[in-house]
Length: 365
Ligand code: UD1
Ligand code: BG6
Image (tube, rainbow, N blue to C red; front, side):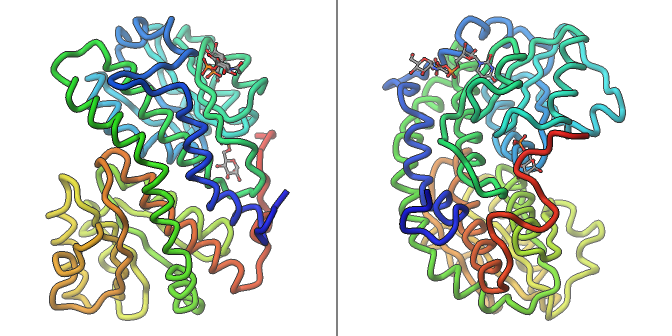
């Protein structure tokens, strides 16, 4: 039921303080985390030579968002695979690998075929899904339900943020045997408890994102630049705009800007740069300066109060978001972009919940 909302996508975006609360329920202690579905397998995971994430679309992006923190806490190489590409290449997978399959529906054909492939190669297979009883949940050796509640809009929103949170908690569980990261882990656990309130805060940008959508109504194309923890935010923000607003949009790694994308910059092409505070902030400041120098049409997402540091001299539109722990910032930063995609779609008169040519769950190859 949509309740007071016009569309499921809108409801699911605004539901995120609640869905994240249910995702974390029973899983956070004061100084540690509990994942019932993984506890008997943590030792095996810690001893694996590599962790491989496999998914499609938004689920792949969620794993990409959580990857830096998992690498940091586990010290294990973490690689990313789009399910179809892993199958096309028959990429090597070994018994010593842990393969983590991420899928909201748990029924995506490409992801399930990649699972069969990893199982036949003897890897430990872990599922992360929203759907209890799904094929993914049944065929994996172990896993975690994200418990975000049923998602109806074809464009995934609340499942994305819950997937990031679950993989972050998984990283905390895998890293729990290390003394050197204990204070880092405790600070992230504290930030996780505050996250639903921060999500409530960022949702107040709804009207501002509607205004921004109005100003972008005529655009032919949109670029989104991110890096570090927010490379995934750039990919996922662009995917939302593509999927529902039916507008060409590309998420790009800001570190690659000089190697091609810069050629596209002119006074008309809107460019969103994600420049919230983290270890990559100064690099993003210089990206903004270079885009200014080429008279780019900039929209900068920054941490609250950072307007002067990101946009001195030039003109740019700002999206100011609350600051949270670096590895959780992708959960906050995607929300204005979800709202933007939603409002653009409604303004343009397209179907938000059932975009042209797409299906919620793609069960054929
Ligand atoms: C479980 C219960 C939850 C209960 C809690 C109390 C279920 C589905 N969950 O949650 O209702 O409140 O205990 O302690 O009954 N699994 C896979 N692959 C996947 C996902 C999950 O194999 O892709 C397995 C897990 O390894 C686990 C089981 O499914 O054995 C349930 O997973 P999950 O719901 O995440 O476990 P808990 O959070 O402990
Ligand atoms: C489809 C959906 O392409 O499958 C996307 O339209 C989704 O929104 C993708 O991200 C993957 O789905 P799932 O259920 O495996 O997470």
